[in-house]
Length: 188
Image (spheres, rainbow, N blue to C red):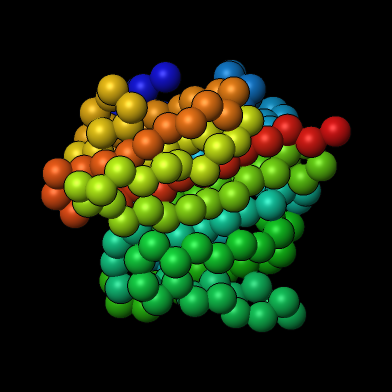
């Protein structure tokens, strides 16, 4: 399944500090309040502010662009997203305050329901050499930069390809490009 910006759902944050673009949610039709197993999104963070709590959810967050974001988890410590494409993970129930370091930023977010699903995240810097993608029950490949060939499909910047079944898939690009691969699996 190939998806692009016209397929995504954009929603403002309740606190007005930014907006989220929902790339994928499972099961289809689920909502943040309605029992999703996994959700992939990007966010435009315009101002510093508190994160919405997600009890029972495991999160991985990664900076895509901007001058950095510090995550203050209160008694659980700090995490710094200082450079793009370096993921950090944390439980969704931790109270989290996002502090912009040098102006607005854009991030990539993966959330899975703890006990229902698990996820992994791999960043691939691609060129002309073919590179295998990690295998998984469900694999979502998001083009951060460039234009990438995945099997027989072309994935442009902002595009997402979702595969099920764990088949082998190779990626390459004519020019330096970046692909984020999220592996997802149901538990139990």
